[in-house]
Image (cartoon, rainbow, N blue to C red):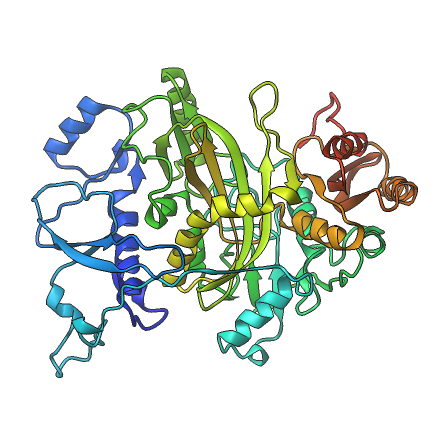
Amino acid sequence: RDPSKLFSSQKVNTWSTAITRYKSYFDFHSLYSFYPAEFVNMTEIEEKKEEKRGGHHRVLSSLDDLSMLQLVHDTAPAGVTQDVKLKELEVVEEKVLPKSSLLILTETENLENKDASTAETPMVASLSDIDFTFNKLKVKAWDRKKFYSDYIREGLEERGVKISDYTDVIMLYESPSSASSETSFQNREKYRFHDWPPPKSTRSKAILGPCKYSMMNGQSFPSFLRDGAPPDGLMEHWAETIPGVPMPRFVKTIHENDLVNAYLPVELIKHHVNDPDTHYHLAGKDAIHLMTQQTTRLLPDTRTSRPCVVKTTHSMGSKGIFIIRNDEDEKEFEDFLAESGNPTFVVVDFVDIQRNVACHFFMHPNGEEITWFGSNENLRLPDGRFSSDSYLYLKDQKKLKEMQIPFVEEVVQYCKSLGFWGFCGVDVLFDGFGKGYLVDINPRVTGSCPALMTLEIFRKEYGFEVGLFRRTGDINYYGTCEELIQEVKAYNEEHAGKSRVVIHSMFEKEPGHVRMNIGVYGFDMDECKAVLNRFAQKTKANGDE
């Protein structure tokens, strides 16, 4: 990107914003960009270094003719704003940029632009106006009154957006594809996502996710569904099963003059609620190291340290993630790159993980307040793998929030500096010593958020304390959608006040085979798991998408 565009979306008024945006540009495009060696124009010296080193590398950046400034944070007690000082570092020619909070400038005096004859707008009025304070993030719990589209409406009003300027405001929960030509939205030239190989069917992308989120959409704005409405009986099931949830409205067309709150940026949509370039940047795994140092160490290649983890920057789900332990793993990764069009990727340390925790929140446009929906955890199975089910324990919510808030604060601060607001999910992994690593940032409504909201409603209504939510893996019901709804209804009537099953989304893949997202809520986790396995069964031998 053109560096000047980093400042085009809004006037830069504070050093914190300027620093983060300069830092984003230089780190993202110079320090953390990865390319296969054959695509990089290197000097003879660097070519020899790469030949000797082998594997993949990151591009080095010269500090010639640049001033280098570093932010130094002073420690402060909880609830007290942090003081931050600006320190100039020695510039060493041909040195690799250090991994730190940096502001790189050609001439520091340009910050004050005292030449009245120039038309350029100064970034700050004077150096004495620099404000290095960081206000403590305000966190409030979800009130069970507002739903997804209600928060977007409030945010647009706070930002001063005239909704009447648009034909409609649409909530889009379907993600685009760069590998399939059969999805509702394709990103071919811009905002490419790494969803190779393409799915066998696009119905899961078009129905399961969008319906699941639409259940908690509210009524301020309609939700987009490719078919124009959920499968028969699903909305009636929601209304009957979850007390007080307003039923959503749906549209099946997005017009040119619609304003769209997109799950992920879409190439052909003209008006996004958030800047699509910023949204795409935040969705990349190469943005994580710009937000925090509380993450896995970035490596220069796949040979320096093994085992290591390679992730395509804009992968979908669990696609594009490889653990490199040996040359055979390296070969598998190289083959994937060749088949999938050489997507961008990052290489990070492998960490032995004991806990896998995710949280879900809404960032208000002021960047100083979030609404907290809760946390879920994927537990380790006896064979050492992590379960794909989301375990929801209300008794653990306070502790999980305390564990994750330090990571969330850095994410919110970074998003604020780029003018991004809205829903977000953060994944944090913890090792055996309790050290946390921020490994994934999802700038959108995230998978288990509707289940957490459902459990909170059931806590108020029935006193339920636990929930188990399944959206991947064994999510098959062998029967019709109508039979599934009737069987769930019978269970809920028989176990009223004790436990409850919710079909968050579903579609009939073929006659007699239903795919779904489903949750079980109640007082006992073992009972919830037994009930979940009764309804959501393993894939039969004939396979599935």
